[in-house]
Length: 164
Image (tube, rainbow, N blue to C red; front, side, top):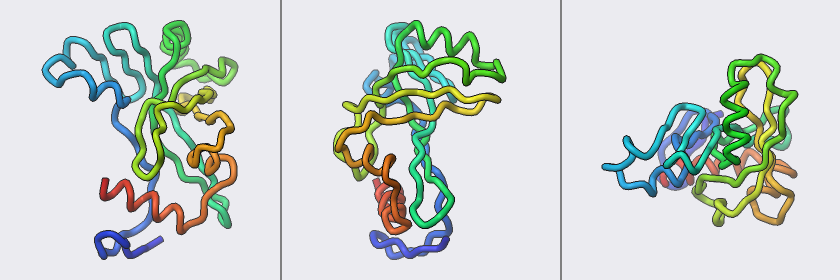
């Protein structure tokens, strides 16, 4: 899908899923201390061996299509659930585990504070990243996950992230 950005006036080709490289809290650790205090991989993060995060997908249906849009985001989980997830990370039958409770651990452009959102992390088989389901609240992101978004709203989300 091609669209003309309402913010920069340029044409952009297609929509892709959006991803956040690390939990918000990773960036609150001074850069000079991160190597010592943090362990960050593509799917797992720990801070001071006290805070534990896993990466997953928050999927939102796109109305009028059979497609979904996904945010690759991070959630905090308990140490027990984190250690269990690490233990079964390579198990092709992960879906029998969980779900795990977590706190949304990223701020997303174009939404009110998302760090206060509760979610459940549903593990999936074949080493697919977990699917995150938000608690059903009136927060706009939770409403969009439940009800879906229009292609026009997807463009707004994309523009907010392109120009954040």
